[in-house]
Amino acid sequence: QVQLVESGGGLVQPGGSLRLSCAASGMLLSIYVMGWYRQVPGKQREFVATITSGGRTNYADSVKGRFTISRDNAKSTVSLQMNSLTPEDTAVYYCNAVRAGVVPYWGQGTQVTVSS
View 1 (tube, rainbow, N blue to C red):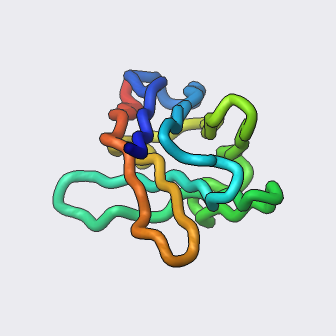
View 2: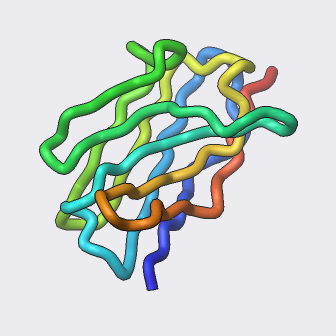
């Protein structure tokens, strides 16, 4: 079955960087739009970034210029490079896979905490 497994979260100081990875299995990653979302307790899950099969990217205004999403279809992975992190970036980050006519897939999430 399809699995999305996130990794790379952790504790980082403000201004620091982290790189999240999402490993996909049981699916042909190249035909999906892949994305990253995040959620803090008590709030709705929010969009962070997406990347199409052709490599076109889209970012939330709050992360534009600081985060970079990329994909490696051959390795079935999607990454999120996060720079200049602030405490407001603290959240559980989720990997997402979408294509027409299919229920979206979600990973289990990875915690990112930005604190001094």
